Length: 510
Image (cartoon, rainbow, N blue to C red; front, side, top):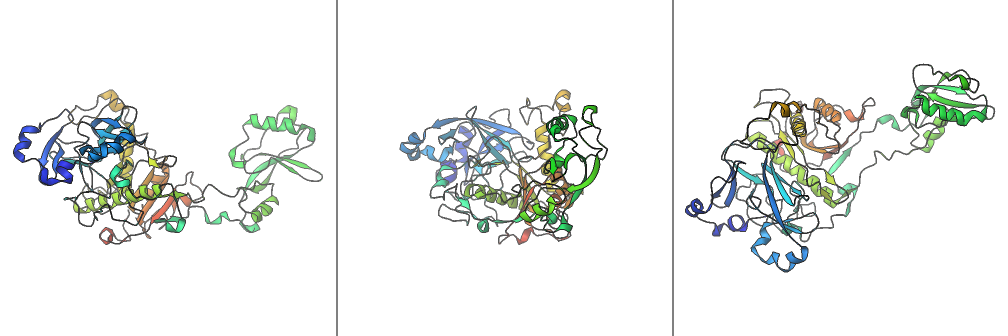
């Protein structure tokens, strides 16, 4: 989406005198206004303070079929005002939707709403009065960005950024039509050595149990079967007894030998009680040691079978995920976003550390979830004078606040505070990051890594490892600990040149 008259071609911008006549200063109760600025033309500005994650605009769209766009639309001024809709049609945003200017550090995100055929615009952070409201067009621009920050490279249509033309991925995954030309096949699988990150192993070191001493075992209750004709009845009783649990799901239920069959009962610490009608079918229960996990290799299968018959299950759960060109672009865009946020923090006197949670990548469709919001935060320990204002904790808090917000409250920056009834549901329980990915400039510290584990984040990517304080492979690797009940994928981004200004001391908790 673009606005060629003020942005792509500043020479035809209206004069300030014309702006005073043609542009109403107050548009609606959302607290936005249109203003003209030199070199950019029309733009959207805040009239009053706007909180983070506030819905400031819902723009209905006019939809053109792909045929209409190819035959007519692309040859008109509308070409620079179009979004690529999820079904391949082209959308022209009405209202304020076509007037938001571009920024490398946007304070507004946008998402498609196919049900209402509209585009929703939401603030990504708190916005001050008279501050311009900007979105992110992508990394391949067809005009000169007059506000490009130092250290943020400006791309043109002919620029190859090293990831196959990182052009279309605006932060919400909505491609700009002009930027898709000449790209690689987005479904192409990226080879492991070509990925822009290194995977951090999170499986315990002792998982490869290749000798008898390394086989991990637990206590379990068993009983000898006195009459094999009762085996079916025993299995039915066990299923209804409550003794059956996933803790022993990797083991066969019955161990057969030449002279005796033994029945696996439970791993409960208490002696199981047999029903009266089956007491003659089993011996008195007794405890033995059985393998704690399934056999991952043929060798461990043979070793574990000496304790108890074990399921052979080569671990697929932690096999590397296959990445496509589309997902790699999505992640690369997120990394650049978090770098820009870290520099924003540094400019305001804070540590140059930031965290970003984009909309999740849709593997099936090769896009991001259009209705999702973005959450970005930077370190606030200095400005807030608070030791716990780490960016990871800040972004988790943002998601918690957003998900606890009553669904019936449309955010209006000028409205009154929430009623007592509405405020009562803001209980902080909806903080979970299930299926979400967190990008951060620096490896999260042990405290933040535990918060990510509790919040059930899907995966974490960071640029700078923190060998003395990090909890994702540096000083420790929390999802690797055997006692935790959740594991998340970790990737260490391959550091690119020009990021030296973001380094912090090895002893800093990120």
